[in-house]
Length: 128
Ligand SMILES: [Zn+2]
Image 1 (cartoon, rainbow, N blue to C red):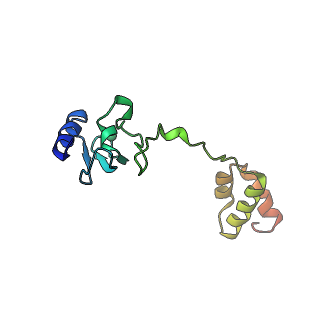
Image 2: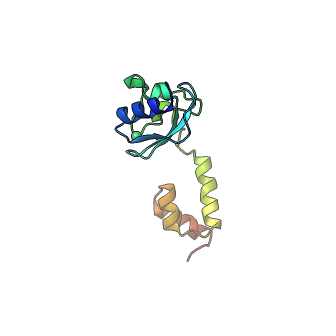
Image 3: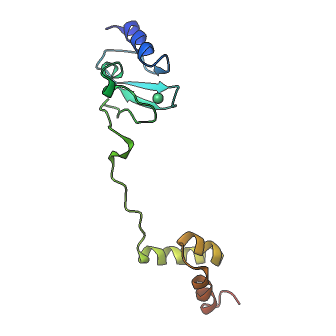
């Protein structure tokens, strides 16, 4: 398969929406592609781009890494545990006090009852 054969097949498979941004070297050489339909830029091997259905670009999905290995989905990586510990919360609380946040801003960010924040501010003499 040469460069123009590849372009023809690529245009046919993706109805002209996907373009290679690098020049075609061989069907195994990874190229950077751009998809007009979903706006994604991704790496892929030409042979996969026009290969079997499951090897082709699927809109909004990261197609692959720079080695052209296919990533199955956006959700393949485990999500980091976002739950904050009370220690982290305390640290953030003091940062916000120092940075002159209002009690209601602090309450909103830390998702705690504003009354508790107000009590702290009163105890510390930060507000009347
Ligand atoms: Zn796309």
